[in-house]
Structure formats: structure tokens, C-alpha cells
Length: 350
Image (tube, rainbow, N blue to C red; front, side, top):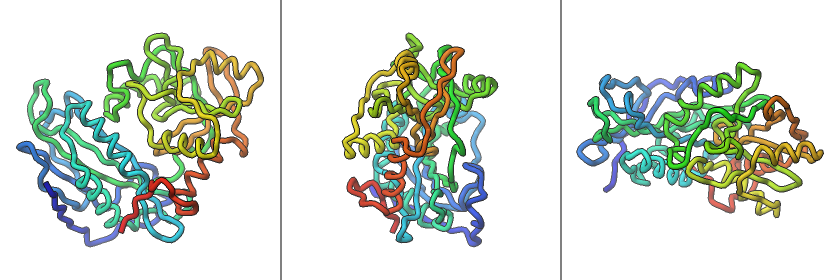
């Protein structure tokens, strides 16, 4: 079924200096909304940004049927605007919806909604080299009913906000061995709201102790590294790029996938496997050069300078020649059109 998207542009353009806008605080003038009722998507529209009116009984407010994605649009060197790896994000969004028992969004509706919105609000895509437009597609259950069931009604929405450097300095993290982010059979590989809400308290405790984030460990032995805060965790030890293999507890990160692809093309050895904090300790105490970083859409590459394991802190390699910065630059140059896009990752907004 084809979905026609109606567009109601706002008369007045509000964009001024995108550089001064805090991440995620100020939305662009428009948003996309579609409603799911009677088993189908309807009333798809791009309209001026506005607040929602929901019943206090809406199921999303009670039972956690909320799923989201995060991707970015960039101003390329030739002035065109591209959306990075929109198909990969759509694939992950679809898997998350399936896990949360939420209705499928047709590919064309998803792609066209985002492209129409970005095109209309193109003035918000930063021209600065380090800037991007953060795009947040999400879905919530809106059926008004207190009672545990999958909703029969939903809203699929997309909002945008300008984004610059997420972390301004290398991070200090500690290995978390009390709390877990996800367990086997759970929703760890889905981008659903509950995963992030459940992570807030242990992250709060880490910040109280002087750290920026946590390195999550697996739920059984609290030994094997899983993710870094809200990002995939990656390490470089003896020139090998190592990251935990994908599982039911680890998100299939688009940045993670992109960096692994670029590393393999550069003939850098990569390993997707379990890595324990004991292995990290051994590498540090053997005098090896250890790089550690988080990889995600918002931060792209977030260098880690300190890893606390138990009561001891270990210093990571963060000098300018680190491999993570080389991969980050190559990814940046592909996004900006400075290097050939051999994988067709850039979706041009016409």
C-alpha cells in the first residue's frame, strides 16, 4: 500500500545559530507523524512541531511499548545533504519493533518520511565540519487502556535536532559488576526505552564516583565486557580491533558495523568475540598499548582514557596517532563526500 505524506510547512523559519544549540534540546520546526489504527498506517503527515495529547491510560505510559532509532544527516563538501545508512537503521528499527510486538512500518513510509522532513528542515543541517542533524524516529503505543496487552493503536513519529560533538574530552569509565544492562533472552539488542531507563541508576552511581560512564558486563559472571554506556565497546590491543560479538544482549550498532568494515578494508585485524576484564588487566599490566572507545551514532567515536577495574585505574592510549582516530576520520570523510562512498552508505536528499 502506498502512503501519501501530506506536508504543512511552517510559515516562519526559526533556525539561527545551530552551533549554540545543546544536543537534543531544540527541535527543528517540523515533525513527521503517522497513526496506526484498525490494522493500518494512516494520516501520514509532516507538520509544524507540536506537543502531543495522550490519554493518561495510553499503554506506552504503563507497559513500555516504546522503540526508537537515531541517525544523522550531513552537509557534504559539495553542498548536498545526505542521510547516513538509513537502510541499516530501518533494518534495526524493524527488528526492535518485532521484539516489542509493535506493528511493522513499511520501508517506503520510513524512508520517505525522513527524507521529506530533512528536506523541509534542511536549513537546520549544520554546515560546520563537525556538525550534523540528529534524526530520531520513534514509535509509542497509544491505545487508552490499563491492562497488559500489545496495543492496537500507535504513533510513528520523527523529530530532528542539530548535533555537534557529544563528548568534548576522553572518558573515564568503570567496569560495572553489580548491575547489568541486559540479560540473555531480554531486550538488549532492541532500541527500546526500558533498556535506557534501567541504565540510569548505575550510571548515576558511576558519575558520583567521578566517572563519565560504565562498561557493562554480562549478567552471569559479570566478567565479559558488553557495551560502553549507551555505545558499543571497542578495543585495540596489539594492533587488533576487538569488539564483543553481537548477541541478544548487545545492540547491532551502525557505527560499530561501519568501523569494522573500514578496518577490514585497511587490512587491520578484527575480532568479534568475548573479551573479559581480566584480559584487559593482563594487556595493561603487560605494558601493551591499549585503545578503548565507545562507538555510536551520537558520539561516533568516544575515546576512553581511564578504565577502572575494581579499585585500580588503568590508562588507555589516546594519542593523536591512535587507530580509533584514523577510522573516525575515514568515516567522517565518507559522510562528507571527501572519499568515495563505495558502500552506498550516503542517502542523498533530493
